Length: 110
Image (cartoon, rainbow, N blue to C red; front, side, top):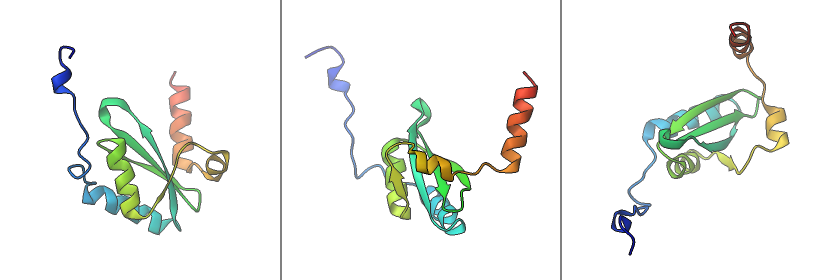
């Protein structure tokens, strides 16, 4: 056995439950936008980013402690998780005017 192998972490599926606030936020977004799909992105120590794309093209994001928690939260909320950014999903996204303005400010400030 190599040094440190006795400290290997094992995943306990019953211990990691999605926080109620995260599930409620996902449900609320989906209800307000005619349904939603999600893409989960691993963001290192921070955990996982859940990008929600509503049926109306509006999008938002939420953060979870890990990808397993994010997947469980989406499943509990009844939102389909896409495995990757498919073209159809990206074409459906419609950035808000506020987002366009914030991106313009960032570009002009460089």
